[in-house]
Length: 258
Image (cartoon, rainbow, N blue to C red):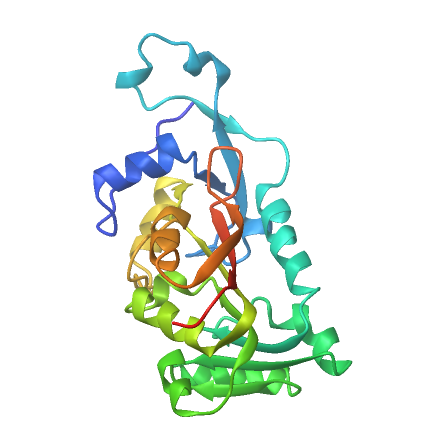
């Protein structure tokens, strides 16, 4: 049994407590990387030991955590990829820079069942994606730029980019304006999670070149509050909790004009 604690300037103690206790998002980092980038391979989910649940001293204790059975990341990410594999028509991908899911719609595009436009402000990342996926179209900029053009879309995707948006309310409003009547908005992102690492590993990571690049740590609760004010009907909602990974998902259909 070992005690772990890592101080962080990225989140308050209240946010960290919610991540750990309410959402149950604690993972053992089994990689040697400064930052895990393959969650399925790099992270193992931890769950609170059953003995802790009925302990009278639980409120004043950090708790004892053990490896969880099953693959939370594989299950939740697989659900999202299954949705992407069914999409057809004209697709807009807002914040496509990481390119995590671009390959999941390649079959529909190459078969002529869909078109794809990826938008991201990072020119270097867009160039890399264009070299890997020549069947796709890209725009260096933001979703706000597209209002100047005549295009509209059957699907707008905001995949693991919502918390990178400087102003999600404005971005979602623009996204809905670009949706055709009956079109679908799919938003998925991750909340922060706790990492269990050795002291040496944590020290190397904290001293690495990585920078905190999220504007916020919104969950499906905050994102739905933004989208619910728009002409959208909620069709699917998957929240983060102790039995899930840290990935949430919201799926809407446009019901009218802004």
